[in-house]
Image 1 (spheres, rainbow, N blue to C red):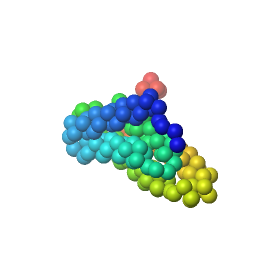
Image 2: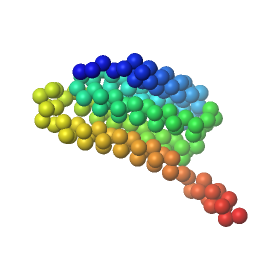
Image 3: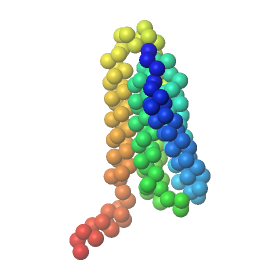
Image 4: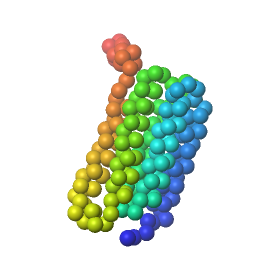
Length: 160
């Protein structure tokens, strides 16, 4: 097995640092929204750390973990240090649910033995693609889903 390049190790370290900063932002936001943000960032850190520790399918697990972390960090501009809206909190909770599923998948595929991998390499590849698609879809859903009042504001502005 090849060793990861120092560049990829640095990239993962930077992702972990960014997620920890986002966790701190979660501490600064009052109410349940802050807890959700802190939880999402925490899941991102766990996913990255789990991917680093797995013995099987390491490259696939790291690819999934890096995508998850990058997408989590892209959520930050949507957040403010003030209390977040109920709509945003619900969208974050839905996103968090997908992250937990992905975390469980990384743990599972990272634990498969070499013997099982020889017979199931196609399924690992499919699971990797499925995780990446889930992450992308959850991120798009997060961005697209908006409260009805927000949609009305956009509609009113465009009809003037």
